[in-house]
Image 1 (cartoon, each protein chain N blue to C red):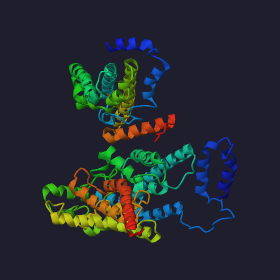
Image 2 (image 1 turned 60 degrees about the horizontal axis):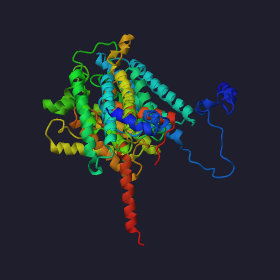
Image 3 (image 1 turned 30 degrees about the vertical axis):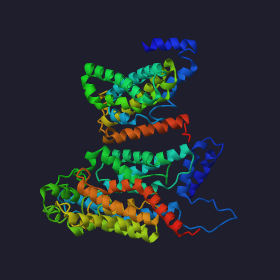
Image 4 (image 1 turned 120 degrees about the vertical axis):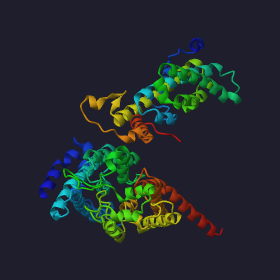
Length: 220
Length: 400
């Protein structure tokens, strides 16, 4: 529904997938990544990444929430009184979070139990609120949708990288498939990878590698 | 020697600017300066007088101070091995042999992996290889249990050097002690391989009847629930196969199972004497760690409540790795407090936290590792307060 409106607005100015708008998706994957550059959403990145499966579901959940709430807030941006904008944003975000939560509960109850509070906590996820405040409140719905989608992707990308190494080194498996056992190697699980500290180390290494590849430096 | 020099000279040109192996110049240079004294001298102008103590000599001094611990550790590994399999009359040579085949591979792995990573980063970052790893490479084996799997030593060393040091910028930039980072990594990554009864190397031998791998710390920890007098339990432990293993004098001498280098308080004190005499280690830190642990022990004696709390305070100084940590880990000049009064605070808090963790946290039987790592993180803060207190004092004195 929101996409239809978005395209109408877009036609007047520039095409939806202009060069500038494509950047909205590619930047969060690298130089503007919500986790490794903006350092947002760390809490859930540590909590749900012991295995790939919950990490993947969490990424999809956040992708849905951040894309759709970005779109809706952007549609409403001119009618929201600025003094109560946070509560309006929260209401819309929680609408989507509850939807995601209920869908998960209905179709994959085990995973829902595993993710426990972290789906509910997407409401307060800094990435969602951050994109609403920083982008959706000041941009048209089309670019806002793309921005939300891009940031959700960027979040998911890091989550999956972290979960990949944590599950591989911690349990010797990928998506529950025992890789080392299948190769006939006995693997002793590394306990530190299952602790939140292990996620911190991996996020740190990802940041280190990313910054030495793209040369990003923080500016003060 | 001449042959080595000639070989090095022969390949030198390919490493110099424009040569085909130019990228690896620093690896070449490291090998060269390691084998031969550099032949570069100061210019004819400028200051010519220098103190003989440089980083390399400082590191060698610390290694010399560790030698008593290492030699004693090698012998003790063998000694405990034969006691545990019921051959108390084994020859000295056999004990040293068994100890050496357990300990030397750990040392080789530690140096091999650590220096390999050091060379790699020096080449990547184009800076000379420095001597930073010499001490760490010896400390890591000394804090390992005798029969630790060698691959774990390699993984822990790699982790400690990459995450503990290179991520922060290399030698002298690390926030926490690297050797303890390696130990802490093993402690959390493979808890079953570094706890329980791993402190004695049994090998293929069958443990003697009545054998138990309990350490003084685990006996004291069990006393919390059983209520048994800790000193009496120490005295009766090992009856029949290793009589009096945990008596006070034995604990001080270090004739007990434990990590390779940590068992003997006496050898640590000899090391401390060398460090203090040469100025390589701060006596303030060593004294205050012991003092802090003793004071905290006395205080807990006063509080009382369970058998561990009532253990005489001086036992805290000889069980576990407190002495080794105080002498070789806490005094690490990079991670300790830099200000003189800060060193007192830093050491005292390490000692106090060690005893607190031992007594109140049954999940972590040995507190010195966590206490030092914690205070490593806080030492810049201690320095900050010392410096600002000093500034305040001087400002009050100043009359404008």
